[in-house]
Image (cartoon, rainbow, N blue to C red; front, side, top):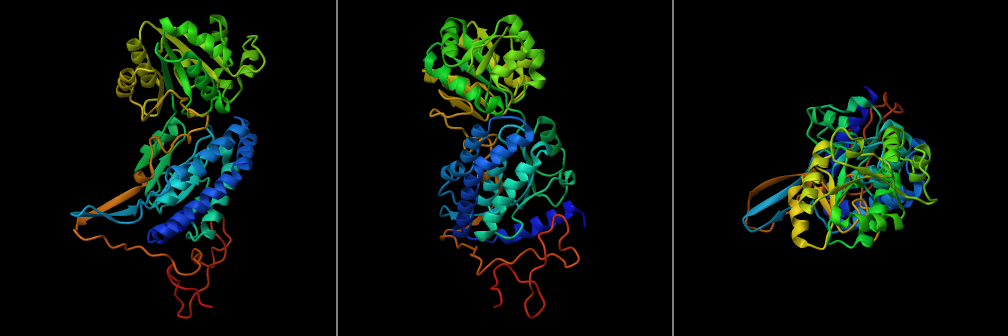
Length: 461
């Protein structure tokens, strides 16, 4: 059996076992996984940054906490295990099965893995994480730590795994793919023949209209667009501001730590963008020949229009923010739609405004899954990171990983799930495969009659 096959078979076994767990046991496992992720966030973030050479360890640590204890807090009390009834119909939640999660190279990759694993644990799905090669070691270490915590809390052996085998994508043993990599990888997931939920590159436009507080908006934008050196897919990519409000906003942005580039400087920065991914603003400015104050956090590059020919219209993955001045807020909405149309529809947008009608018009007009209002696109109003790529208020929710069976019923539904009794036996690996890559070790003991124990059975003394 190939390594990929061993991983998937082990995951399928765990998925079948975990599908029968009750809500209390699932809650215990989720809490244990979240604690393990939060406790390892600092070390895993440092390892990921050292391995990839991209980003800021302290910022990726914050993202790790947001995608562990933060996710658990947001979804506390969310029960996607117990059947529910409305007096006429009973709905029984069933997990999707075995999930393959493709994690990205940038945008806090370990935090993304944390989040995907927690969503799977909440919904009784087994998950195999396939990290990007540039962060394979750090993500593998993080996922294995979460797997150990889950098994210790009572999860089936193999419910959480990590693998780097490209043969996993498209394998019919996978029930659902979560793709949070680059656009090419997301498209490959959709073409794999397996149901997929994908998020390609974010490309968040931010509109600041004339009713917004320029100082407050500037503080949020600089903090968010420079967070983790601009690697977050939710971070602002293009700033759009009506001409009448532009000068006050740019002055406020400068005071908050941004540097407005001249036209020639902006052109040199455009040429540097491929090698500027994950670099800080001072590093980029120095190589572009721009003299900026020490401590500069964000570079502002003027753009005449949001067009495909301008690389600033797409995601830069660095703290460089294109700035488009428009005649009116209405033209600003059109420019924001152009940004999303060129590169990045479906992820995030942001607006700073005190006008409820303008906010509603903007949100209704843009094809984005989430619109941040008067806060950073990647950070909330208190400066804390939103869970990246697939946040609790983002495009993917735990309920997306559940299938429902419905039938007529007026009585209170009976819960068909039970807690496993006693320690959960290990995955039943054949003796000739024990110790092979992708397998957990020696096979579990057998009962006196020679059959494998079911996960609900007690171990023999």
